[in-house]
Image 1 (cartoon, rainbow, N blue to C red):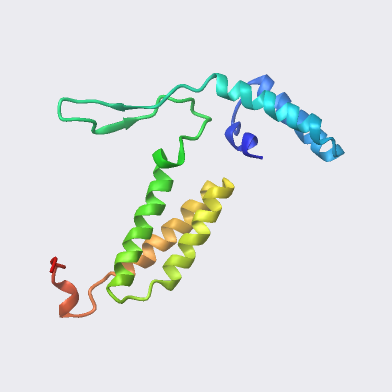
Image 2: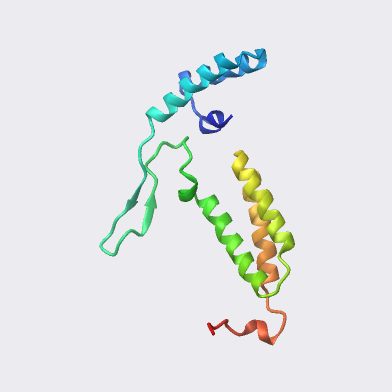
Length: 153
């Protein structure tokens, strides 16, 4: 349940009670009642959400300061774990273009992305750490040609 993921750690009695009601309805097979309970919980969670903003400075925006509610995850394009998944994936693509075998790294990244999409952030982070470590190991210089900087043609 995505709503349950968003509500994780909430102590709001309406949220906690609504989730329990939805779980009972699901267990009883009463899908309309479960949907109504989850909609109420979702509305309650959405009511407290504030927008996120960049912190401006005289040199332009340099820091991202989330001002949303602590229990509500930011959009995927503003979430650090998601951005790290993209970065490690791009680094693996560069190494693959250099001729290195990135099959294991890409397989682990796919599993990390799947875990992230399922809401299992702990597993996604662990898999991402493993992929990043393997990528760093694969990028270690193996000969004199690997130590030269890559220059554009």
